Amino acid sequence: MGQLRTVSVLAVLALAACKPAPKACLADLPVADPAHRTAGMVRLAGGAFLMGAAPMRPEEGPPQAVKVAPFWIDRTEVTNAAFARFVEATGYRTVAERPLDPARYARLSAAQRRPASLVFVGGTKAARSDDPSQWWQVVPGADWRHPTGPRSNIKGREAWPVVHIAWEDAMAYAKWLGRDLPTEAEWEYAARGGLAGKRYAWGDQPQDAQHRKANTWQGPFPAEDLGTDGYKASPAPVGCYPPNGYGLVDMAGNVWEWTRDWFRPGLEPAEVVETGGPPQARALDPDEPNTPKHVIKGGSFLCTDDFCFRYRPAARTPGPPDSGASHVGFRTVLRD
Image (cartoon, rainbow, N blue to C red; front, side, top):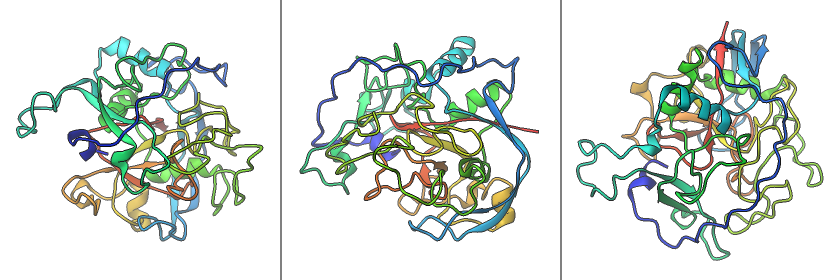
């Protein structure tokens, strides 16, 4: 994702026209407020669980018996409304709203350094699913307020998960509330909802086409999302799908979620995972070995069983800390 911000992207479609936003799925979303530190959160008792699974992707597993202490976690992904309150209170500007530092990106032109973010713009039946440049575009002016570009906005989408959030943006919001980002172990413990060793957050059975359990992609990726879950190639408002066993919503699909942990392929020994993963010096993405990245979890509306298949609790992938995208958000934790 990080490299795509600084390269030209070829053969992309025009952004889809905006449609009227459907209603929010939850009516009792909390107001983000540092004075109410656990508002909108669920307390989990913690304990031992089997983290990971037999690897279905090279970066996963092997499983580790891991312990997590009690903690609170947001019931939903952080919404546009909650993030807007943070920005109003602090004046914070996200990474996507700032130009790239000319000292760090001296080889780029001024135009290439202007504020921008990565937007999924779709594909065609001829698009290659192994070539992201055919279905992602770096869009100047795209940010959390303008999720598909400068002509878009979040009016009527207050209950949607905030996107185009870089790791430091998520950390800034969490610190404002006196919270933190979850470790990978905490996130996966929460996502499993008490279902030990199951493939999905709801059990071992795949989604029923008539009763969707998560906002994921249905159809040939990236050419067409059939939208049988109610949302076509787009995030859904938080809480539109059934909660897991802990009462948490959207722990599968919708948008990817940041964790604190640095990424390395495969799970570290249990004692390392329990304390927040490997140190930055050992962070490694084999595709970009010189760019330390954080673990993101949960998959997004772009995940499909025959392509990404990362909306499983055990799935994990690297996210560059200095950029966001139109399918990346987060939730926060508060430790006892």
